[in-house]
Length: 452
Image: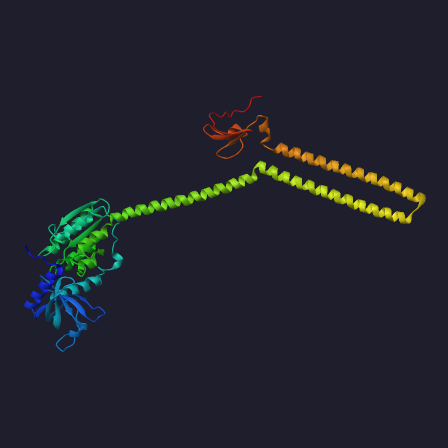
């Protein structure tokens, strides 16, 4: 049975083999992806036309007269490194731990890249103000790439899982080598002339500066600049930035990332629908609550303004007035009696004999007139109270119901039906009798004037 390695065992075996076979190496290439974390160590890559190698330059190895200044280390620079080849077990990658780093000058392609970049920038090809926005969830997309490349497979695989159903047209073009820039520019011009696509996407897999040089040419840059529809680029890896990327309306880090920028996740649509449903239900419930509160307020107001409540309030007021009138009559009677008794006592002290008798007779007469006057006044007030009670009883709309009549209201307006013109066929009415309430629909409304 073959031996089954654990990940650590296999990595350790590779590490021992590599470090034993290459204890100290010299390597030359072009600097890329320089990273300077706060620890003081420097991480970068060395590239040539076909390969890439990770370099670690620890802070403890940076001093020395033979080494270049760390501040001078920059992308595109040709350098010579010497150090130990080792395996970084945590990621399963190999790298060189640099002990000597010497400057060999900037590479030719990098210098050409910087020169073209500055020239096109002066012309305004990279201005943010001229960049167009990608359409949201485009339905027609033109893809410019090599039909046999892995970048297209990654792009199509991810696009099938995102966005709403749409159409993708592949425009085959050469992405590397002689005349590649002309094929890319021609394909983009064709996309623009056809007018079918909502957006154009240029994708290519990663590679060295030489591999990506097609997209660092003025021909491709100007083709991207003059395209009338938005252009999205997904060229190489995240660390690879080309002239086409700078000219495009939007740059993706990778071909797969380009698909992510074009189309949102389908789960996002489902979540958006759920959010909209929640908002609609919340809005409907809030409106329903407001309408219920409004109906409750209107019912309370109608209850307060109803004829029955009005009659009850008037009866309460009449009873209160009757009590007040009775109380005032008693107070006036007691006041008059007190004044009379006081007058009698005064006369008793001042008069005797026949004069007293005459005065007593006068007082008796006045008392008789006063009582008659009070009785007459009370009768008048009682008649007034009876008249008001009779008038109030006549205002009660429910009183005729006991004599066989009915009270009809129009359901839509709540008004009492007095004329045939108030309703039309199909309207609903409420019919109130002395013992029941009936809902009915108008079948025919005769609005003709009555005959003499």
